[in-house]
Image (cartoon, rainbow, N blue to C red):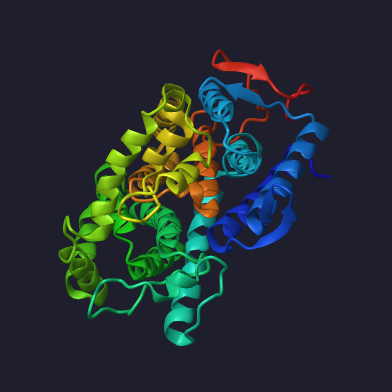
Length: 427
């Protein structure tokens, strides 16, 4: 008979795989309607998985502790609720931010980080195969509500691999690019570490091609910066691995049609480009609108408040989008919330110093850089993946999954502040 620990570990591992595959591949399709809003497939899945694992944790009397850094997360949530915008957006705060964080930090704590990383690579591979099939083999595009205008989206190039931009099963090329970026980082990390080479190479190559076809410059820049950082800081098992990998990447960039599209896309970018000028303009717009009221500047307008503010005080260029997660957070969560968000991100990057867990650092760095170009928390897939990984990152110091597990797991320690569930220790 399986022990309580092994039962929970198997169930949580299976559910973590399902959650990641759905969050990275399933479109925002609404399945349930309520008085205060609608639930999509992904949101419904997150709630169901959360309830299942909480129920098992109580039944098995698992000990779960609040780490010191978690206090900053709950303060972030508390300040977010002080000035909440509406009941529906309060529900979004719970489903998109709180539940994924708790899943990653507590309920998936017995899932190996290696499993999470491999699942993200497989997710990117699945999405990329769908993109390549639906673009070149049997061209079609999913009809996703709210994204019909993306069909006519131009990549700004006269001659390119595509006339438009791929949006995959997600519905939007920028959001798709952000999700593929996460998968790409995992694959490249494994290539440098020479682990799971077949899966890693397939995932990295195909996600790179698919990421190129989104023509998302923000994702491209993020990928380039993080790849450079990884080439510098990731320890390789064999000599010249980094040099050979870097040389191959440069060669492909120079001679391939993919590299040609990337170079042409950037060469046609200038300060007068609407994408650039709008984002520059929104910096001043955000500062002006966030400092109008002292209380709102400190505590924010609540999650979703920036969208309401954009409706009331639309930007002069007529494009009601901030396109920067940190500027949006300043309006939504206020100065205190933004500072707490920075603390969480900084700590989560620093804590994962173990070589096996360093991929989490690089994924978060990629998300942070890419967040400078769009409001990732307003897209359910990217918002949920971000806080799932952020929660997972908080476990970096507590467990090292590549080492042999002890026969008893205890979460007592100076840095732990409270026990959520009472009962015997996990054995």
